[in-house]
Length: 117
Image (cartoon, rainbow, N blue to C red; front, side):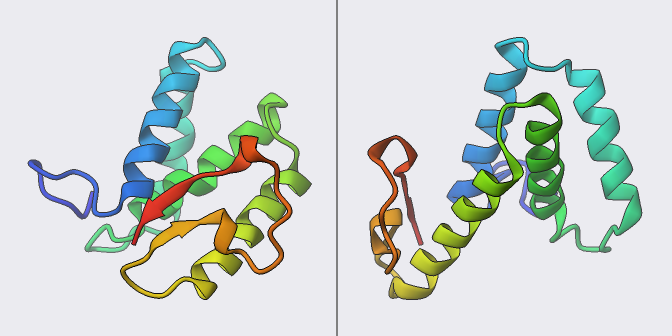
């Protein structure tokens, strides 16, 4: 992990992704050994010396696993990713990042969220 032991997450989304992964594990959607094996395989493929890609790999594995488990459709993940990217591009630095900032915003409230940039 690129962050320090005292602050393991550099960005809020990293902490949220980690928490969501743990929550799905604790809810019985998958076992931690299976998750760890998948994540370890991905990390071995393209490991940067500074580990700056750690949570990018975590997200890649997480999204793929959601699809395999039938918890999210690939098209749904792709649209949500695109919506967050549009929102990020439209949000000035220092302003709370929200899906409402997506110029094409038409996502229902159950997909809303915000992250401090």
